[in-house]
Length: 455
Ligand code: UD1
Ligand code: MG
Image 1: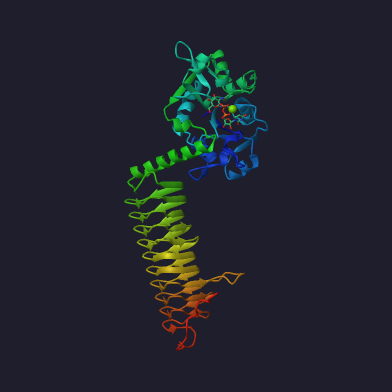
Image 2 (image 1 turned 180 degrees about the vertical axis):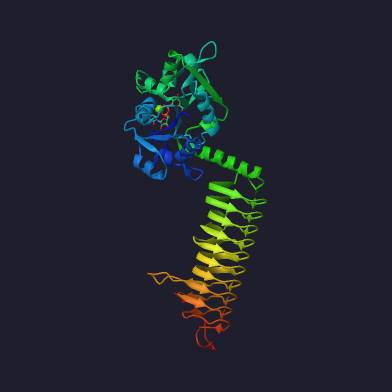
């Protein structure tokens, strides 16, 4: 099979973003705009992906250091034709597809269709735009064959009335592309080397030009300003929400969910409003997520209930567990089945075994908690001495009374009870009551509360 090259144009400065971050590194759905384009390119399984970069180059390259990409610097932006010229030395024979780095919702099916057409022709993706101002116009002859693309600034008044516009996405034989680009000039209104001039060259050389008209405007919309970014984000989110609904997920409001990464759901999952999912999140059957949760890189197993305002980061929640409201699971937390984590409880790097409960106002960090442990309100594992971190181990069936500090490293034995208000600095034996409080309870009879001082 002839080899496929994909050239992604991404040298534009993005002035209208008013940002120090290169335009293509701004995010849609939690990923850089350019990442979406690269993923589309990868799905087409090309031999080469070449990204033409310019402004903020090092930063852009670094963001995609893991990917197999040829980076080509276009030091000065002299137009789209000039940009593709920079990529020519890296192109194998066969076909070349040109994509734009600032069009995140680019449609892989439309690209595949262009590639099919480009076996015998120059294929381009066009769109009928209500207000075509600024775009290159597709000029057709009396037989409706594409004759040329004329840029807005070079167009006559009659041509400016044409509503069929160039999306910038096109595919052609690499050999033809090379020969056409070698004769490009910049004699036009903008003094730029226009890639779009090759359409005229194809007609001259009797190479058929096929315009595939797409009706999905968002899939060809480039991002130039934050106003575009926010619109595309909503479109992207609404498409993801629709997919979830089609799979049977209940969303209390499809317009109030944000997925910044990938969310995989089982059957009969319910998600209340204003939840944000980041990174890779997997949710099992019959899980319910309350309103206003932020969940990142997590696995939530079957039947777990996550109550409102819960934050989960890099953690695993076991089957049938109940978390929140207002709970925070920080990285490295693993909860087994049937655990309860209640309001204002923070867990970090804690492994909690089956049936254990931490229901109120506690910090449990760097800890191993056994089965059926009950940790009372206001318990703190003091895991940090200011320089080093230490572990707390709480064995099966232990009961930790309220307002207890467990000063790590420390182990609470199986079945041990710690009296409320204790500060535990030494290991507590199994099955015994351990307490460490002020020696005795005193009362001072006749003691008076302080009075307000009169001025
Ligand atoms: C271009 C097309 C126009 C089309 C429009 C669609 C040309 C001459 N015109 O317009 O027909 O309707 O896109 O949006 O091709 N870029 C570079 N290097 C450059 C110039 C541009 O890499 O020197 C990149 C930009 O980063 C961007 C893309 O090419 O991703 C398109 O450039 P842009 O300036 O937005 O498009 P126009 O030239 O206005
Ligand atoms: Mg331009």
